[in-house]
Amino acid sequence: MALDPGEAIDPGEAIDPGEAIDPGEAIDPGEALRAALRAAAGHADAWLAGLAGRPVRPAHSAAEVLARLDGRLPAGPSDPVAVVDALVEAVGGGLTATGSPRFFGYVVGGTLPAALAADLLAVVWDQNAALASLSPAASAAETVAGRWVAELLGLPAGVSVGFTTGTQMAHVTALAAARQRVLADAGWDVAADGLTGAPPVRVLAGADRHATVDAALRLLGFGTRAIVEVASDRLGRMRPDALRAALATPDDRGDLAGPAQARSPGRRPTIVIAQAGEINTGAFDPLAEICALAHAHGAWVHVDGAFGLWAAVSASPARRALVAGAELADSWATDGHKWLNVPYDCGIALVADRAAHRRAMSASADYFVLDAAGQLDPVDWTPEFSRRARALAVYAALRSLGRAGLRDLVDRCCDLADHAATRLAALPGVTVLNATGDPAHPGPLVALNQVLLRMDDTDAAGSRGAAARGDQLTRQVTAAVTAGGEAYVTGTVWRGRAAMRLSVVNWATTRREIDRAIAAITAAIAAARPRGADPHPSGVPS
Ligand SMILES: Cc1ncc(COP(=O)(O)O)c(C=O)c1O
Figure 1 (cartoon, protein in one colour):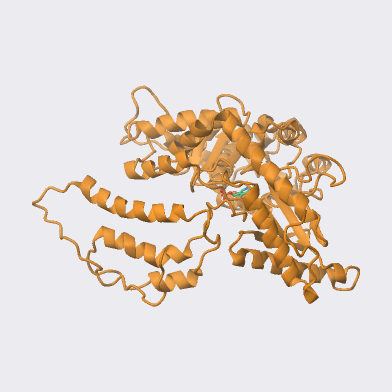
Figure 2: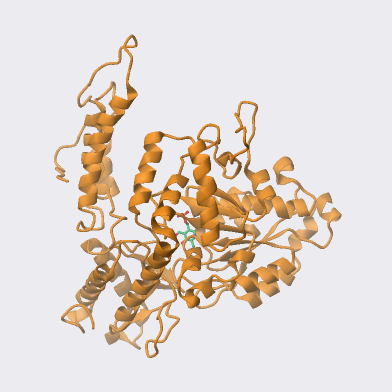
């Protein structure tokens, strides 16, 4: 895409006024839409043709794109094709190639071809997924895709499923169902009576939970002070002994309970939030043990498995063992836009207690037209009313991969992450912080698809300030790798010290892209070290 930074477009001026609409003339919307879509298809084709080769990072900053895009509100119409061209011209430099097989930042999947095409069709068809009568296609796709996802993840048959924007809203959905159930068990119908005067709900969550858990709890009116933080181990796994102690500790807020609590003495409404796949380390809470402990106290268990739940499809018994016990939980949140490689946005909330899920989410009105055969109305399972038919892409992804294809995708990503971890661990000063294996013994060094690295300056080892120097080096290398465009990696802080993360979740990533990332990291370390000491002048360590 040719980008001329010199000439900013003024959106206040009509680019090409096109033809004014004459209300006396019939419009063929299909014709108008096809012209715009053809223009978009040309740009899409150019983008995809260069996806594997282009620098992964964007060329322009957000401020630079804003300067190109901003301007006066247009006073009048412009031709749609001219608008599409102008938009691409203005924002093209601000696109990150997140679908590139060399994107390893955050946890961001690519796009499977069938999923991309299906999602595009969902937009072209402009389906409102709320009601089966309004979009029989969306209802059917959610029914089938939801069942397939539950089956692949090894969850109980009959779980209810809602397709959300992401794991964030899947948490909100599932935790609203949890709130409904635990309060109903204490004699309080939160759907009708709200939270004012309700028995306090205790929420126990691991110290290394994802930030979206806190956001969900805030949105649901619990407040983050309701969270009892349960200690985790060096990899971020919730410690069962700490959970046991927390569950047994009297909750001083329980004394504040109102009349409903008095009807159900001795049972404090409790939700335990566990994690399958910590974002930095990829580690799993011991789910079977957590579910047993929590259920013994009548608690609801919710699992944040944004990417980790997909380990259930692995051919490796060791990887499947990580997720063992997930099926015992009461609700789960995961993503389609991570390891399943469907386009943004797609999250999935699954709930074992259908009644609580529906009571927490559903809306009804006389003006809803209900399906005569009682087919699924998606509005009953997510917070939104109108929304996209995002299950079409999930259906297409699963249909194109099949069970074996998904298994291979997951295992390939894990093997490639392990390859990266093993090679990088061999560099002087580099530590793989989430290693669970031993390089001296056969078997993987990292358990899943995340690689958490730290770079220390070997020359500074043992000196005062060595840790701070390592922080600086790690941040410098992370920034340099991403700025170089060869690979996109992101930084984090782990146990108080700077770290770099690689997440391998793209269906198109192969050994080639991993080796390019390893070479870029190796070169960035050499460039960042004082005196330019390069332990591997030839690039990739063997
Ligand atoms: C463990 C975990 N939970 C939740 C999320 C949030 O997912 P989303 O961005 O789809 O809301 C992520 C994102 O990486 C994650 O890794």
